[in-house]
Length: 357
Image (cartoon, rainbow, N blue to C red; front, top):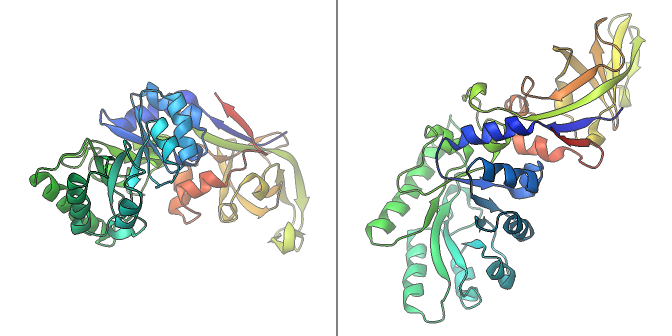
């Protein structure tokens, strides 16, 4: 028996179509499409009517181009292999004044998107004046032959409800957009909304925006806890198997480093064939699994195994569900295990059997 990572392809497509909501979506496919697999995700998103993609990796952007010859592909990180960007018709961020002035000649014929830094401070022009400086210089400099086609930012606080930062970054961004449009500048693509912002705006685009740049919602996880589970459907199942059920008594220690001490005689512990070597986070192991439709507590986590305290209804060869649509990744995000993407990224696809159903 070996633990399994599996995706229901029909549910994945159904969720992507529901998330799209007849809007223009730029699907984020970074990190091998959140580890769902780039080819699977891109082909499914194309089937759902999504033909614009973004990633942080030039290598992945080139792979997307091969999968989707006619798609719009946006690279969220600035790179320096300009020939590869140009030859694959990849659009790219313009992240700073320094980058613009240093590489304006090398960026010839490349479509770039002006990036506004906003509150995240990860990348981008620091203010409207810097953006205007580039636009003005580009209009009047014969050496600047890039194509400025887009305007974008990232909302770092859209999933925060108890602080004012989302409202602040949203207002600052809309001021940038409105000012530039009112001054006559035009952009083929304007995008800012991540999954959280997109759902906070009722699955609608912000004014004058061409796309919402959606990631985690397309992969079946809610971006914030106030959103109902019925809004987003998880297609992923991660499951192991009960190898055997052991009986221990009061005072017995089980697992590495005295991980669990039995407090009752005749305690039943299921030995399950999945552990942190398969990508189960230690914080996840402070919660439950699902066996035969019932939740049971994990008592100890090891590299290739875990102990689960069970009752007489659990037997060898029973399936042990770590994640599915009834015991979701986003549930444990909201319980403090780690971000949706962190739990997905932790999975060891070299040790787990990977299935698409």
